[in-house]
Length: 479
Image (cartoon, rainbow, N blue to C red; front, side):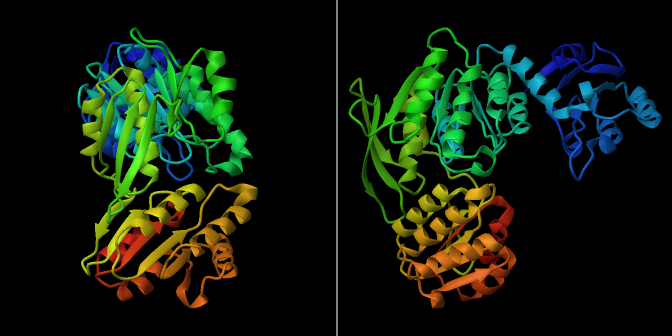
């Protein structure tokens, strides 16, 4: 993990030393005082509900070597810091987010030996990131984003966790506002970038799918060359905005483009040979140099084939061993709350995809639900989707209509007005009101549905994080 002196930190971030020695060293950075261990730097961020500056004293007492404040230091803190020999720093303009980004950028520049892959996209970026981590770790010391730490704070934390002894770093890069991807790319400086697809996530903030595509395309802005290979971006051939990203972003920046898909001209192509009773795809990969690889993917759904293509395209662009990489992917496990198949005490199987959602990822999850073996009832519990802006009504209507067209025994919609829109659309498309349920909260859904689910039933839970369908899942699993 990151290891620097306070002097290095000050130079990188333009922060000011309030107390202590600039020669002091620290190892690791955290933004939660409960995670402080001896030697760490604690950055006191100010949030809407919690002010990290209030916990600076406890961080000192827990052994932090450096405290980074975003507010003036009080006398009590300075006294305690002096007793423990802790350096106290104040972030420039009290901007903790910018401090984190600048420090992470400096750490990245200190490690030019890293082969860095930046992964973005509306759907599938977490799975693609996990596939890449499994693939590259077979032959290289690899560090990757934990969970969903992919925003302006999560990306710096990911880089802080990488060590100088690491050889490959896989960074998931998310954004929901204009300009954020450019800021992240300047910090990450990927050698290879992956754009899984352009969907409708955050369309309320970015205005249109083209706006989303242009925001994703900015991932090339910070790309850098490393000896042995050129900068490259991996794009899916089937995505209708790949041409825009290639022509208006990649080519002007001198970044090589690797198209993956099922087209004859793609250097990496995939054939879906079959899907087993658990929804797992058996896939054959063909590379333009003649290499052929095939096997059963460990994650359910046709969409996994596209994530596999993106991951293997990046593996080849990096010059990593493809056979070993593919074996690593075949041996990986599902990420928690990402199409994770779980079994309740009652025997009910739950497809837990409750971490987050977009219209396109809901469609993909419904495909998984309908492709898996089920001897009982097939049920979809769908939560509303956030950050759709003016498109919310139209897109929620499409979700409801799409779900209604699937061979489901029951659909339950969870949330507020958007859930009403989905339910109305499903009924309009002919889905029987007798087989449709409507709940305001995830807890309500669990309380009513969990007792009636049987050992042969199969249930999908999918919705935006704000709906909290993980609480529905836990309610079902406990019965």
